[in-house]
Image (cartoon, rainbow, N blue to C red; front, side):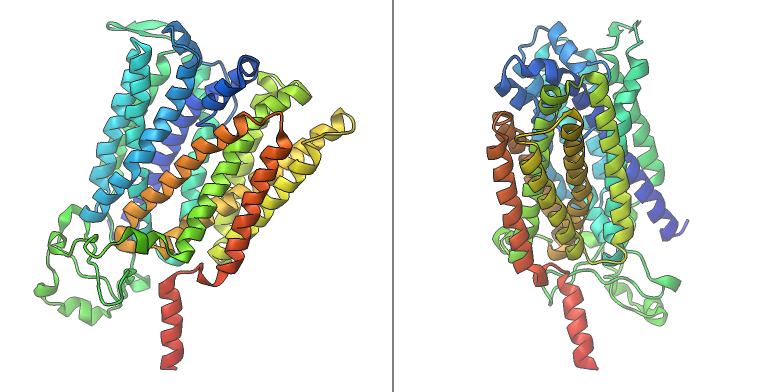
Length: 505
């Protein structure tokens, strides 16, 4: 099997990993949505905490995690703790997994190791003897989710810049597909009512053992179909993709699978490849430490990096804030029940998936910074629309519902544009040799936004002018930042190559 085939199978496996994480996230978290409306009347601040891990998920079926906690005599706030614990542990462990992958230049072992936490965490959820064990189960499973930073680092190192955005879009669409179909599994899991040795399998515990088995199966898929492939070669295999350099004078070797000695990748013809001396084939572990000359301030406080990280934070902050207020809004104005919310979230999930595939196509024709700018314009338009038509709705039921649908549609339309472009841009404006750690920082920034967004919006669902006004101000700020830094939002190597070509001509 050649590297091209290994690469495609590896990408397929990564897609399955993200889809499975989406299934787990959707199964546990979207169960909250059906209870958000009735729970809203109890305490708005409790609802804020419960929404900390809210996502545009999927059709909502019978609640399990909340009922499960009730059986274990847990207080209401435990649901919020259980849902946010997963995100918090992933937020902390992401940079650590990234450092590991940057130093080892491998991700397969990291994925296998992190999946163990998913397996153990879900089995703990299945056992569920107490509310504390249930809380710990989500913390443990969240540790496994932190390996996403290593995977994004791997994707950066094993893709060419022009194809990277499309691959990121496909991976994100896989996760969204998992969010969409995840709760559907409870249609049959809710029918479970038997014993497995000393353990009771019912509609409350079955999601844990089901996800545990899926993660075990995924371990075998990773073992069989995942390779730490080197950067892809150009057609004919004669020219190898040059690795991105943080420092012009320093080159970083890239390790192949199974720690085999490899060359430093640079443009070479076939004769040079064949005649390379053995002295150039030193084991990668003898290479310089990727963090030897690393400076966090120099890496992350550059103008273009600050802009991309700010875009990541603001868009996710606004997205989760809007998601927080959607269900109370639909209940208050449209009397949506579980069925109405089911249809709404299902359609939202389909729109986002289609949006990711559209961006995948668009990224082949348009630069990442243009996609980002378009996404920010759409998000600003959506926020302005909501500010005008949703804060003080007028007209009949039909007009109010139409205005709401248009606002949600516009908000979700801009999400794939910003999500894909900022990930792709971030991979290009940060050093490739420390990409795992950098992606961990990026994901932690996003995780923080998904926690703070609902905290901001949860207490302001009756003051939409303040909530949406602040969100619009943030969007306008990042739009201006993007416009002022537009020339810097591109891959430095591409600029340097163009300048070299011009000077050589």
